[in-house]
Image (tube, rainbow, N blue to C red; front, side):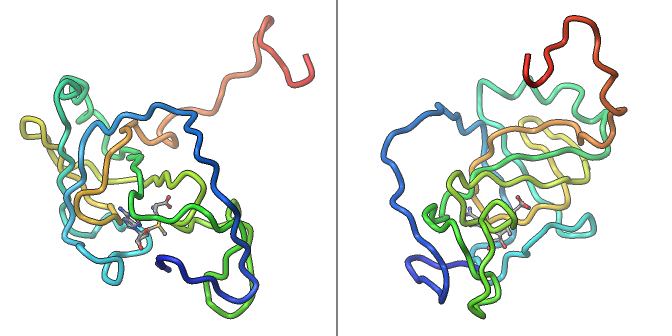
Length: 164
Ligand code: SAM
């Protein structure tokens, strides 16, 4: 689904506040084969094309040890997304879903994540498979895939609980 200003049957649009709360830094750019949303996959695949994640100075040193992980979680900013639809009709059939129940690129904060397959690092370039974004999409963060970590430890004395 991609659209500039179209509203489908049953969809609900809201006025987006102008205030900005977070000071996000674009730490790089993601280079992919896709230049139009028509051809971009909806979700990446680990047998998909090799993509290049360019890390900007001064963040390059943060790539150290990234190759210890076969799978990484990449967070990026869908910079061409509109942000004002809280009910959406992904199938254009009048059936609507709340934005927080779908992985649509159209969201109040168009943050996207992909679990990618690590391939290699060359200088400030990280090569991966599994991306699903347009060429030039801004990079927000890279982390080891959370599923590679053991379940959260049991609460310890002194940990805060909801309701404390
Ligand atoms: N895998 C991510 C997730 O689940 O959070 C993104 C899924 S989203 C459905 C992927 C779609 O976002 C692509 O098919 C494309 O239509 C759109 N998209 C990709 N790059 C974009 C960009 N830079 N700005 C706006 N939309 C983009």
